[in-house]
Image (tube, rainbow, N blue to C red; front, side):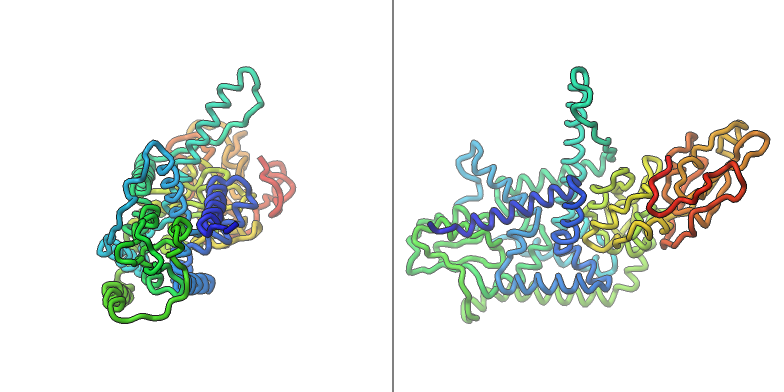
Length: 519
């Protein structure tokens, strides 16, 4: 029995999709960390941002992906890209729905090369000066991450909490409630519009997004068109049945001409599996000339245009970078530990929202305009909603783009991401002359402590011990907050946890780096 190559590819792609779903749903910490460090880091734009920031791993991954494309075509799009696999799933469901055939079947398209390569050129033009707006919007990993984090996970939590409410009357502890998800309407609508767009394109036209709007697909098409191994039609065997054309998800097969457009082929192998005469082959090809060379001229022009645009962007990088950085919101957004600083984070975060997905405190939230022209949907910390847990470093372990570098827990606990500001004129202790002490009770480093004066405990600060975790801001009962965290443009190392030598006000033991949160 002959094993179908398309079936092997589909199984591999399905495994990739399941792993990414588990990753963004934070189903298991071990799986989440492994996927972030493997499949996440071989995605194109995360690797590119690491390479642009001087990361050797990014350069190695990019070189590997280009070599794979030169050798085997767009294998990346077939089995590595989660958004591409999601489109294949939508197409699979469409073919088995009430519709007899997807509307794209039986048609061959020449694509929209000016739009396709235009998106790629514009993406690289704004990326080199340090703006990731186009990457944040069009990167397939980021789009898939938004689908999961902003739509799928909140929907699952809502369904689970509804089931908890239903079952608690007769089986109170059958299910555990899920933490709530708070999203702004602009973010929800952005994710929802992209979901409708990509799903509709896939339902009616297969991989249309990949070959029309995806900058990653456009980039790999430059190499896959003349890949060493590529699909071709043996005209001496072809009987003209056009079965290959009907199953092609990229609409790139011209059976009447006996040609397959390698630049748009996503290497699904379906055409080989359905061909009754085995006329479609996937074999090494020698360089050709004549008609094939003339047909390649438009793609060469696209490549030369891309190189010229990249050179222009490099020349304008310094002044453009200065303009981009001036548009970051004021006051600065607080960014996760391991992000190093605003400049590094905004220039490397692809807004895949992996950090948002794994944060157990739900303190990391995406924002529409936190970073101005530097990027859109890039996340920050909202301390009015929650805190950065002292004993957690999950976000530092999963970032695929290097925007958040890995930090050991002990290092994270000494990383200052902001400094605390205390407003006496807002504090209950000073305005109402009565005890509160909520901020001091939750501070994991004792950077906020109390001194008893006139039978009332007054908050005091030990700024060197503050790491900007936001626990004090979260629990402060007044509005506007009497104590809040101000972001640092560049992260710092804090001093050790503060120990007040006076007796009676603080615990006798200084908190160690591996101790549990004290309250």
